[in-house]
Image 1: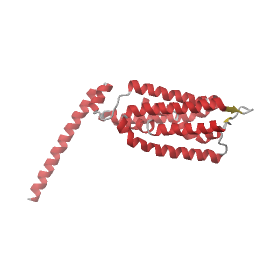
Image 2: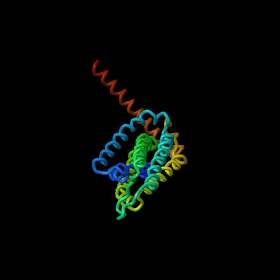
Image 3: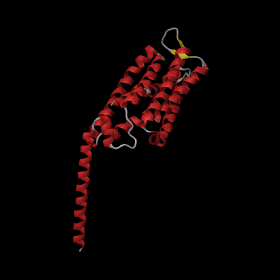
Length: 242
């Protein structure tokens, strides 16, 4: 559940939901420019997801989460620091805009690098990991709970981000960079690697080996029963043909 919650705390949906407004605040004025930036953002996210197909099984889940988290923390921190350095607050204090052209472009690059880092790490791995580590008898309920926690924090982030953006401005992105770094620390100390490991091995790592062993025993009995039924069926068919 913490991984799914952490996925939302990385700030990905702040970028996805409010990219047009962010684009305007970093100097890309106009609704059309904001929507164009959002469209490019979606393309980057879509294409970068394919990187996970080639590297997640090779590098492992832990390495993907740690490397991706650090990558996102640097990109999000860069975005926040650039905004805090070059942002200009309007006279009525209702808008904040990065008027330096080069800083604005660097902000855009930081956003796309952040999305790239998310798409091959915390994006897919947080959905993959629970299905691999949960014992068979608990998998349906466990995955349901992890999914519920993701959607709950998705809702909270979407509701409170506009208020936080108005109060913190670009400091909000520094906050999410801190969350990304915190997720890296959590994964390093508490998340074991699941690549190429059996449920019993993962059960030992999480302290649920008895549950995993019982599931394996039940699965073995079920396969034996299915085999016996198949043998009786084949015998009956042979008798009928004769």
